Amino acid sequence: MRLEKDHDRCIGAGQCVRTDPRIFDQDDDGLVKVLIERPRGADEAAAHKAVFICPAKALSLAED
Amino acid sequence: MTNTDIDETSELVSFPIQRTCPFAIPPVYTKFREEAPVSQVVLPDGGKAWLVTKYEDVRAVMSNPKLSSDRRKKEFPVVVPGQNAALAKHAPFMIILDGAEHSAARRPVISEFSVRRVAAMKPRIQEIVDHFIDEMLKLPRPVDLNQVFSLPVPSLVVSEILGMPYEGHEYFMELAEVLLRRTTDEQGRIDISVQLRAYMDKLVEEKIANPGDDLLSRQIELQRRNGGIDRPQLASLCLLVLLAGHETTANMINLGVFSMLTRPELLAQIKADPANTPKAVDELLRFYTIPDFGAHRLAMDDVEIGGVLIRKGEAVIASTFAANRDPAVFDDPEELDFSRDSRHHVAFGYGPHQCLGQNLGRVELQVVFDTLLRRLPDLRLAVPAEELNFKSDALVYGLYELPVTW
Ligand code: SF4
Image 1 (cartoon, helix red, strand yellow):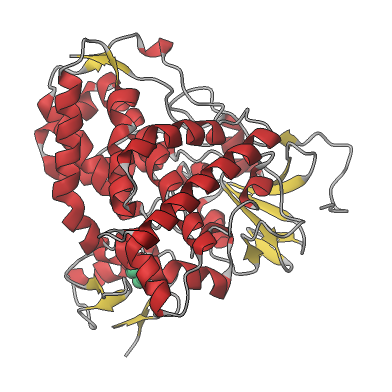
Image 2: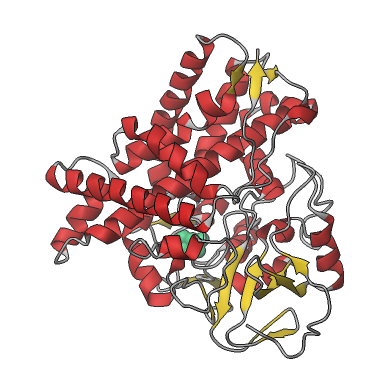
């Protein structure tokens, strides 16, 4: 699984960072930064949660 | 705003729907959600709107680009008399813009409220909270927590963020309170908006002359570099940050403290371990969902929501309150349960307009609950709970006063 982000959609609410700061961060503009692109195990569950919570549908999980 | 499918003779429910019990959701929401989750209601001006009450549908409404937030459109539903006209007195707040216009307004400000930025503000928020507790401890008991603590804390926090002199906060707070009162009439809302606008114009002028280390000064500098300062737009931004940042937080402080003082088991959970507080904060946000009017949208095209066809030109109200009490998403939703993970609630909205200041609000509430309940272990209500006066007549739910002693 690969985590993808869409900066055009991101509204910088930081909900992803609050889900798991090891996987997500915000850049200087406040937009999402993906720190772990291929989350596994517990990280994958957290990534799914962030995708669900993201208010702007700026995150997605893609099959490799 | 007519729909030929609707039987004009049938009695429609009037919106807004007032809360009567401080804890329970008005039964009408539950009935709608169970029987007809996308239903028509009548607005105060006689217009009609679709009321959406299921979590999934509310998220669908709030993230659908065909449903506009632009109140400058004349077909936009009038849910609060005078509100659209009052908004027209300002350069457009970002919350009423759609699509590219909205991102252009929001983008320059988001880094001010990033998780990192807000975390860096935490020590100052702690100082502010401690300061107002120190002041409160000098007062004769009982005190009205709302006046001496719940309003001043977010008010000072947001004043500092904007770089606004704190001396202005009382004037501002009074006007904001009237603005949010449900009973304020159309002309009243417009008059206050004009006064607030003049106040903010002055602040912007002062900051242009005397920049500091604050959000407003940074926005001025950014605009200067990008080709020109848009004073009305800056005044609107400040007004929005101020309006959104203090009443809401104050109401959540009051409701949170009220809940914990009347439910000892909740208080015990907070006191047991500060690691419980962030979850408790989100659960309180979910449970109370204080904006009582939901999100309003205007259909720019035909859209299907929850199996119902909403036609171009019709109005939609997404009830975040009803969504946050949806049993399909939250087990036993009428229970205030600090141990649940309710972070996917929609109390801060959903979609591109989701609250910009949510991380700040959460941190303020966390610091407040931890500090207040630790420093005043004997804090208790100074009147019986039944005598408290809830804001069931305001745009944002809360308490008018919270008399406490210790
Ligand atoms: S939650 Fe979504 S919109 Fe918010 S910062 Fe993360 S990716 Fe961007």
